[in-house]
Image (cartoon, rainbow, N blue to C red):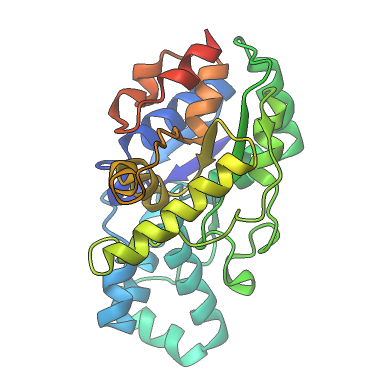
Length: 288
């Protein structure tokens, strides 16, 4: 099983643990990743805030490069990158004139022979779920957590075409397969305010606090997620909300791939768990 792999900027910097753990888990499951040669930034939020054409051209250029790997599917773990790739393809599909403009900018064939997928979509396939179950070495009897998808993976549903936009279940299925206990809660796709963390910090902190409070009310001992921006926001801002509220939080915020890696017996350092600001040790201990 081979996929072209677009790590994007975050996975090689603030979310290195996502990159490490994704690669390790894929290796365990026999999935071949071919990193896109010469990939560039997808533009994320800044590009589409300043230039519509640039915001489309950057993901499409990366798709062109991905086709050179010979893979039929491009896996994009970062939710922000995933969103921009999906938007670029969707807009060009709806507007032939825009697609024509893109062809002139890209100076090459339009990249329509490759499909953009998220790791959650790959691992939730029936055959992969079976492989995941059989790869488990460290069984966890009672680790309760909540699965947090954030706002970019599922919306707008006509563009991302990912799971159910109000109540996604792919991550829940994957983590249940390794024996974890995802708890029901109503905040799976609420925004964490990552894009406001510098410009409207107080707003962002209130959103983070609400999410962690609700996770605790659901009985969670950790939050599992698949978005680099959400992980950074929820992991690094807990001290700030503790100061503002007077409450103690210390809620471990882990990428779902890190949890898979722990269940597979992969050493925590290889999964980037030493890079978290909120100590995940209480979760790691449950896997040993």
